[in-house]
Length: 289
Image (cartoon, rainbow, N blue to C red):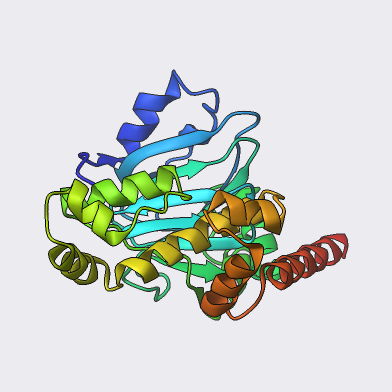
């Protein structure tokens, strides 16, 4: 991302008068030194895009409905419902939420909890989700020994045990390679070969393969599969059928798509969806107690 990053206060100022979600941008985490604070965001019937910015506190972005896309210098994350992406403090990033989506931000003081020093995707348990939503409903400032502080202690204990997921797409920094990633993100069914891309970028196929491997840590085929995986998860989360998803990401047969999905995630798309439905049911049962 070469766009100059804004401080959180700059984002609030720039979007306060123009965004239909003005109340969202009145929550500035930098105004509080509490160990944690949270914000619930509902986009209504429009997509929401927050431009490149940064803040001192670390941020966990949780998708409640729809799909959140987070982009940082090291790559792109597409977060399906009931997962989250961790972004360390002072790291420039942008967020996008699909139309009709809902998400929740959890802001954490740098010294309050040991978290990864790099961006990553985390599973979000039903308990952790409910704790964060409860915190979002409470005042941003609270007593150090009060009920909210105790809630944050339980939240931190639950967060520390959350496993990471493989939903990261490394983005090349080289501008010519970025043309490939931009094109495939816009059209995941683009099936141009490595040789065709090399010809378009005026370099040899061997040079292009070497540069992609060096910048992403993956060969071209594996890198494109990773893109297909995270795009597919986004479509599946939106309710698209497995057959339709396989077509949208350019697979000639649904069996080939299922094979790719299972190879990368260890389960089929249907079982993946079933697991998320079970998690949703668990959330519902937890919310009713």
